[in-house]
Figure 1: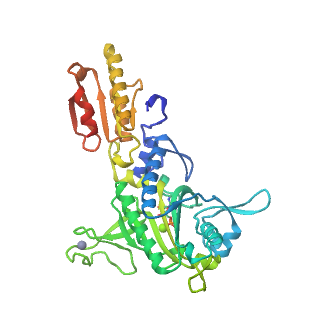
Figure 2: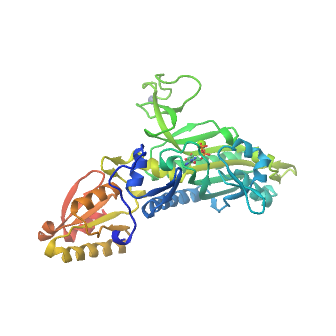
Figure 3: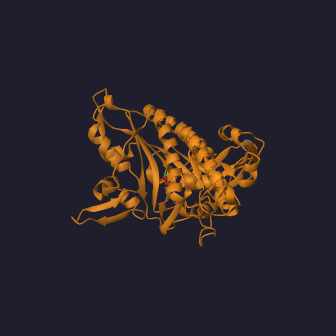
Length: 417
Ligand SMILES: Nc1ncnc2c1ncn2[C@@H]1O[C@H](COP(=O)(O)OP(=O)(O)O)[C@@H](O)[C@H]1O
Ligand SMILES: [Mg+2]
Ligand SMILES: [Zn+2]
């Protein structure tokens, strides 16, 4: 991809009102743009990161035995009345009457919709278990939108739902999802704390939250600096208490962002919506459900929040929008030669399957370097006049700032290793 033909509207200055580092950098690096408070456009670079995270999630969902589908955003309120959640979620639900006079809402989550769907098809224990997921836009009329895409009114969630005939089945699905979540966050370059949590508006007994310690966190957790043990904020004061795991450290307070939440729902929805099946013993029973959510767009913010320096974002390789950025630097009479070499590297790297961005804009070296630091592609190849005279190019690592001068013939190997 050539920068001049792409769309990366970088900003030099910190936008007014953006406090969080991730919010500032996601705007400045041209990943997202605010339409109005809590509502964001994903620009090409941001969309690329989103898709990379989605790919990781799809891969792990498949591993966990879940199948993808796509549910509607537009819901009849009737369905929400069956569980009473039109009241529970009243504050965040975006409701309206359509032109036919039907009462509708934009989905803040999808338990009622999936329960209705699965309940209408699954009638026998032989059809269970069922585990389905989608990656889709959710709408929540958040009164306090915060930190850009961290708390938005329109955001992307991966939500999965499991249906089982018994609690053992639910526990199996829950454990597979738990493991899938661990894998997803690890592959996104995130170190998560996993905390047994309050099920809140979802109902049910067991739930776990996946959180990333970060300055902008809205949740408080406690952690042991000697063994990385984590604990949620219970009713009793735990700060300063001896670590129950290693018995050496003392628990410290820490703020964290919630990225994922999994629940053992039981029969709360299936009973209310009459999602029944006939079991082997001939008895009619409500299906036993679990639900599993990841805030996909929020993951982008968490990655930036934990991977940056004064100059900009430092993408972990697995979620970076590009693998390599090539920067040709205008060199007077040598410019044609420089551009040709940059193009050649672009072709060769692309042919090898790398996703490459060439900053072919007519700008100074300093300007291009600043933008490269800002958008944070892990590896950079700089083609300039002085080094070219020695038959060399420069390779720079964004994370370590390490610079290597290599012979042109050895550059490919140095880049891909
Ligand atoms: N307003 C929001 N903006 C962005 N992501 C959100 C928002 N609300 C929830 N999420 C993400 O969706 C995941 C699952 O949602 P849920 O547990 O229902 O949210 P909450 O705990 O805020 O009620 C959360 O862990 C979070 O990552
Ligand atoms: Mg939650
Ligand atoms: Zn400890």
